[in-house]
Image (cartoon, rainbow over all chains, first blue to last red; front, side):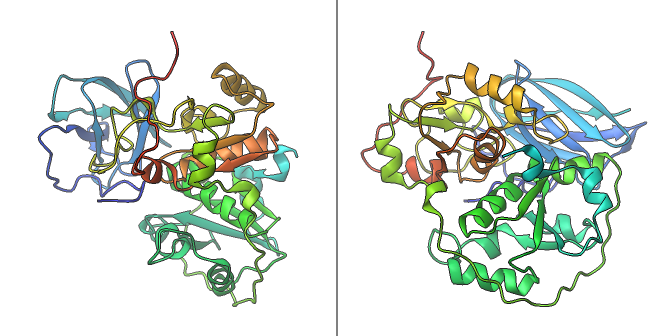
Length: 99
Length: 281
C-alpha cells in the first residue's frame, strides 16, 4: 500500500486488479514517442482528474473508473488530446498525438 | 497580503538564479525528477524521507526540521523559493511546513516544474553543495494545522473543503486516478464538506488562477467567508495547495490544513461519513 501521491513508474509492467479500470498508452509526435509530457486525465464533463509525466518511452497510465475519459498531453513541442471509452474493468489503450 | 508576497513567476525566478540570499528548493517525492535535471543551483528536499517522521505518522519535529534545513544550507534569513512536480503539490506542502515552523520569507514558484519545463527554461544536473548553516525553527504554528477531533467538531459549522476529485469525494475512488486503488479505509467524505477539487485553483500549466477567478470558484461551491475553514484531501498535500489559495492568495484568515486527511478520517471508528455528491437537491 502506498501512502504517497507520487505516480508509480510509467510504462512498467503492473498487476491489474480484477475490478480496476486502467487507461494506458503513449504520447507521440510525428509517430515518435514523447517523454516528459504532462498527461492529464479529464472526466466526461472535462473536469481534471489526474496528471502524470510520460516516461522516456512516452508511456502513461491511469487507474480510473468505467466511463468516457479525455487524455490531454502538454509538451513544450505542442499539445494534443484523445478520447477513450472504458466500459468496464481491464486495460484500455489510448494514444495521444501532440503537435 | 498580495500575490507578490507569496508567489514568484518563472521569469522572475530565471532572472534571480544567482541572487544572493535567494535559495531555490525542489520538493518532490520522486527525487529522480530532480536528479534528471533541476533548476540551476536548486537543492532538493525529499518529501517522504526528509519531511516525514520515519516511524510515527507525523512530520519531522522542530529539531528535525532545524537539522534538515541546516544540512541543506538554508539560513533563517534566506528567501526560499519552493517548486516541484505534481503542480506544486509537494512544494505547497513544504511551503506550509516552512510557515508552520515560522519561516516567513518563503514563496512558491508559480506553475512549478511544469511551467518551467513548458517554457523551455534551463535545467541542469550539476551537484549543488551549499555550506551548512545553523537553522533555528519556531514552535509549530497550530493556527494553520487541524487535528482529527477539531475536524469532527467542525462538521456543520466550519467550511470543510474537500479538495479531492469528485470520484474520491463521492466514494467511487479511494485515491487519485494515477495511483493504484489499494487503500483499505472507507470511501466517502466528511459530512457537510464542500467539494472543490484542488485543480480548480490551477490553470492547465500549473499556475494559480487569478484572485477574482478563485473567489468565484469557492463562492459558487458554497464557501462561506464568514466561517473558519479546514481543508483536507487524502494525505494533506493537495489540501496544502488549496490552503495556499485560500489563506495566502485570497487572504482568508482562519484556514487550517488537516494533514491527517482522508487516510486518517476514513479509518476512524465511529465517525460519520457521507457518500455521493453531497449536493442537496
